[in-house]
Length: 202
Image (cartoon, rainbow, N blue to C red; front, side):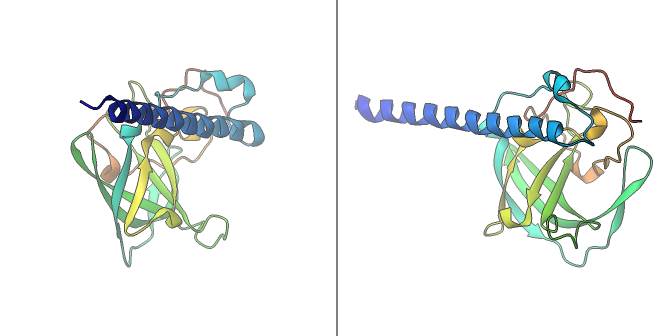
């Protein structure tokens, strides 16, 4: 039995796990600092200790097959304040997660379609079986980009799933994840429930 190759594999895998955890830690630190920099954000620096996340888990980073949709009509996606925002369905994605075959839909904002800074932004809102228990009951979001699609595939990292502003405060127009993105599995990755007191926007 050759010990050296096995040891090399062990240390390689361990190194990958550490580097991935570090990558997610940096992403989350940047995410927290965005609140501090944005005067319109619901949280301030003193609130950041009330943000909680699952441990980084690379099993929740998947490669999804992408089917671009054609001639989709703009529709009104309801928001939690009773209004709506205009989106259109951009693509269907399919992937395997923890042995489950899963399909979801990516959306594009109609309002941002002509804004050069955001025209390639893709929106992935979803609900799952952790909602109202370990995660925000209104679901979570993942931000992606059209340029992330390579050879009809895109990487979906649920470790980067985040709460809408409505998880922290009222007074925001947070889209309600459509039923077609209601996952019948637990996504134990990304942001958890906020433990601070919910704020009231003035």
